[in-house]
Length: 278
Length: 278
Image (cartoon, rainbow over all chains, first blue to last red):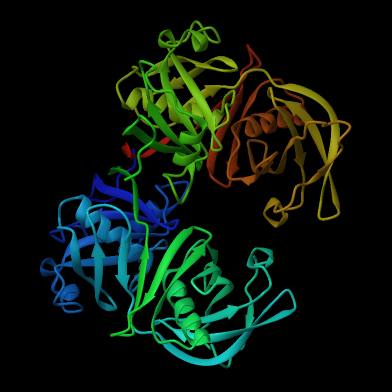
């Protein structure tokens, strides 16, 4: 059996939100400092358990450095990418994180304030079922474009903290070749951009595929779904509303709150296994 | 949480042999009939645990239909592919299966007779470390060829129960583009073939990459490694010997036994997690 230096066994849950999958590592007392190598080993899809990332569950009060980032939150989501690097936050991950807190008995259903490296996030989680994450205020910028297979798609530049280019098109998104990075205007997106391709089904329902920068096509992208909602609102000339968004990994519901202007991302959070990493 | 019809929780172990990974499902009493849909859900790398296949561990005496396939074996490896379909056997899987039997206390270290849909297989497993599987007699046929990127590679047709084409070449195997199926002579291989590309390092050590029919390039192929040993023996004009074989997923040792002519496949079997599928 594998042992990691000084740590013999690490309890974990595995779950996913619209097929963006995570290993949840409970560590309420902050007793477990997961190294980048440990995270990468756990996320390795053949040599390990396999996941897009690790969500370490730590009580903010147990780690002052984390508490300083989100002092109001009882629980902090220490998000690590599959390669072990740190990341600010993740909309699909927050749903799984909140579901874990409730299913494990660490939190009661209701509104939870969850700490992340991007600050405190409000999450609504019931005793079972879908979870809603307040993804904050979108910022809408100018139009730009993406090139796929020589064809040009006009899009809207939206920031959800990270950059998105939302391209609404009549070309069926399932026909697009997203095996290669779409070309974008590097003067507008010097740090790259996540590109969403969207078909409108009707005023309340759209279909999305997404190319995530640095990753490739994924089955879901929480912030990308929110950027789509913002673009659909601009297109409809409204400042609030609700949309259903079909992504390859499942179904998401997006609401732009009339009062705050925040985008609320609602979707599934499914726990599929519990275990011990050896 | 996910529940599968009528089955609330399924205990499992996860492990791999040279990065060919498996979910081991203990079922000594044959009480658990895993449906194809359940296996596919567990093997799903994002929506499930993720693996190349499931190894159900069942006592032969508990399931007469399986016992009939391998009456001498106490334990039967009910191997399922990731899509839920049945499969005969798997060299890398047998190592993990045997390691599970010993680590879980179901068998004592030593020589185990393990039942498979291809008959009884002899496995040598110690209290820790690598595991050796008797992969049986190779059959060597004529030479043939594979085409990769327009270049022709001569190879030897070897059967280990399943068909292989072993191409020894001076072209560094790491430079080959194995993202597409190599072209082969369909008159020789009407049902397709697994193609191994091999660089000889010295008389006792070679490097292999493999394209598995129906799958694509994989990091390891147990029967492919055995076919390589048979081809290296033919090349060296010997009927027995030992070779170390480096595959993308790790290191394997192959021995052709002087007495039986059988190929013995020795390699790692690593258990990385234990848990419960919900």
